[in-house]
Image 1 (cartoon, helix red, strand yellow):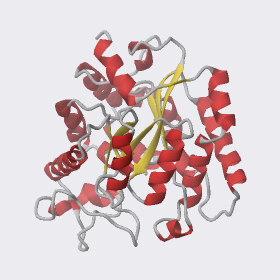
Image 2 (cartoon, helix red, strand yellow):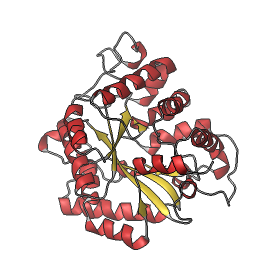
Image 3 (tube, one colour):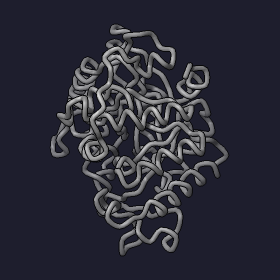
Image 4 (cartoon, one colour):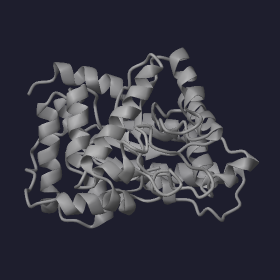
Length: 333
């Protein structure tokens, strides 16, 4: 999962005053999309985490309007999802670079090995349960070694990742962000990085636009290295449904669809990465995580004809990481 509550403090710590000119073209425009258009990647996090997460991701992308996902390579259901990817090679599938293991009874461990990355695991041999512990205990060298191990495991299935992003926003921390950016550039793999107007981020964090300067500076570096850059991102849908609520599928779908429509209406023109977590939940999923209702709601909203109709009516453009990578090759500097 990823939450703006996790990402935004990290961005706050790396920000420095540098206002963005009002007439600066969005990254969407620089990639050749029409001026003034909202362009979205509808991205499903956490493929590979469980069978339910895999099924939810598959349904959201094959039956619904979601069009991108990324896989948690240290997790036990990775082979199941990678087999699906090999059968559907045009799907956007990236590496959800994972450095935490947040559930108490269902955990995963570093792929690089305990002796190689001692600062990345707890006494049980699993990743630390939260971002703060990773920042406290792990070194940038250990994080880079683990990122490389996860990318290598992805490629061992005989396919290439379309992009890289960060589970729970760990790699957006100031201690690690340089290695994250370096990895994308050195491996020539697009990364999730919102280096544009960051309107949704700014509103959520209540930061003035001038304080988003360093984010834009990093975005410019990523762009100059030949990779696409996002104008904005949103990961708030994870908190839209109370885990304690008992709702029917119809109620879940309506609530989440209404909230996505509200989010889409607030998004500014430009290229925005919309994060969700989809799961086709079973009764057993609650033994993994209490997040079943919000994950099921995300899946159901992607299947909702009403959301698709809203996107079409508003002229919102849906794109993929594959398309963005191709557009970046042809974009002007």
